Amino acid sequence: MMSKSFLDEYKSKLMSADQAVKLVKSGDYVDYGQFAAMTLDLDAALAKRKDELKNVVVRGCTSMHYPAVIKVDQEQEHFIFSDFSLSGISRKMADNNLAYVIPESYHEIPNHYRKNTHTDVAFVAATPMDKYGYFNLSTSCSTIPASIEMAKHVVIEVNSSLPYCYGDNRVHISDVDYVVESKDNPVLPELPEVPVTDVDKKIAALIMEEIEDGACLQLGIGGMPNTVGKMIAESDLKNLGVHTEMLVDSYVDMYNAGRITNKAKQIDKGEMVYTFAMGTQKLYEFLDHNPSCVIRPVDYTNDPFIVAQNDKVISLCSCLNVDILGQISSESIGFRQISATGGQLDFHFASFRSKGGKGFVCMPSTSLDRKTGKLVSKIVPSFTPGTVVTVPSSLTNYVVTEYGIVNLKGKSTWERAEAIVSIAHPEFRDELINACRDAKVWRKSSKIDSLYNAI
Image 1 (cartoon, rainbow, N blue to C red):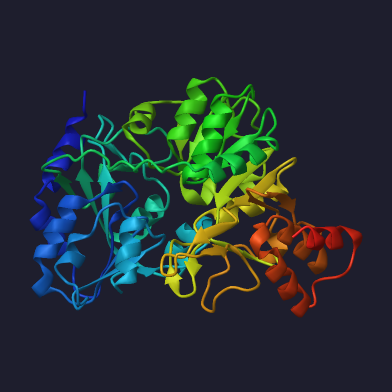
Image 2 (cartoon, helix red, strand yellow):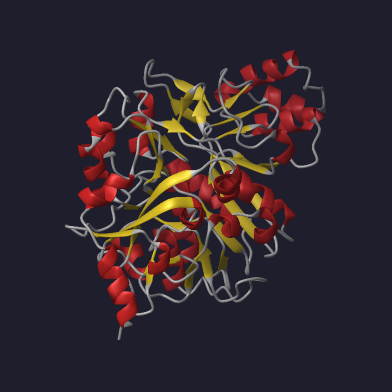
């Protein structure tokens, strides 16, 4: 039974979305929630106030819906949208100068809230209040606790369709200014199924050979990581653990197949630790009131010095390009922003610190240029000017394409060049070798000569 004092406080703070958004003033910074759990009613209500406001900065993270405030203000005179990491939706917005990325290493964002900026109003999606006066933040913990902590005003948008996720992701009614009950209680948006290619399967098969019993997994998003998850579910691997930033459908399959037990972990034994979840309804139903899954703020889940306390950390992420020095770009092509740093650097660094850990950055060796229709190499002599380096060459561990897997740690520039060229598409190796020579990172050896002559 709910305490009468909590219920009375709830009722005193309950109001419509139109009333709650009156908190926002011109020049304010407003947080919108993150990932799948967004504050749609408050967004729509704030958009109605367009003509009353100027230069309101709205922040999201991997936004799964097109903000109403931007739909009504394409000139950005009233609202400016910034995103910690682009989704497909916010990437299209960025292409049209309607969204801007906030560059950060993911685990540092809560500290960014505490040190470098301010939050005037935090809009937060949550489940209905429990009898103890707490709202649950559902599938999006991440940086939201820090946003709530530092915000001048906090508005909860209650959505009864949200799954209840166990972990460090609650806020008490006493820390909330206003409560808005969603009119429609929308279900969480689902990620579309990513087609799996033959190249994905080849890369996944190479990585499977590197995973041992008792490994602690961090799988990124996309067709290839999902393929690895499916292969693990169908394998005989035992006692796998999970400490990841993003929880996706493949973890459900691995758990139901008995591959994930979390018993071999050195910290958070028995728990699947994550900071946000996005997938299909299968994932959301799996998470609802599931005590084996624990959601925590990103300054815990992604802190390399915490992650590395587990042995055999396997970090698996995708990238856009790799250069001949072993630099990794996963977030932009030139000045065109594709995503953001996210947790790739966090987990790649952590996996190397972990006893028996391995960090893999993966990509197909080529892509198709949409303008010319020609095949282009994703291993390049150098990045297009403006390209953001996500993982510096000094921190790069394993790089994987369908042509092989190479470990760059401890290798000199010529050894790195040799290794990287060996996993390039054969059609581009000659060009890459010449680029390595021009860069003075190529030397003669029987191994290199045999590679060159085989082209």
